[in-house]
Image 1 (cartoon, helix red, strand yellow):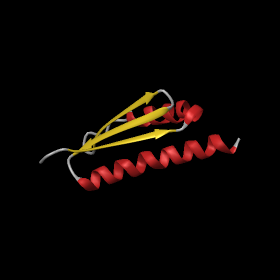
Image 2: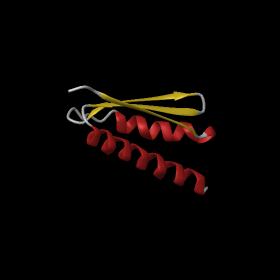
Image 3: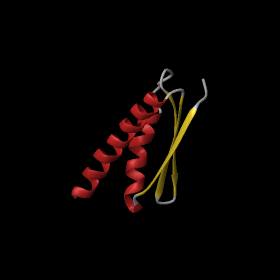
Image 4: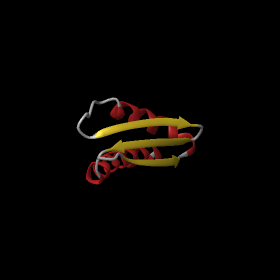
Length: 79
């Protein structure tokens, strides 16, 4: 079965670093049955590359990481 790949890039300015750190912690968790996740910090932007074997796994991984981003960013911007 062919791999499906998605790339998400978010530019959050100064808030990128703490969000990036939270994503790195999650990306390091093993998930051999789901797919691979690569998280990079590029200046003030975060790049997520997700590779998986089917669309429902891609959706699940994307939703998980977007929820983490939302939670961390919401917490930071409340201050």
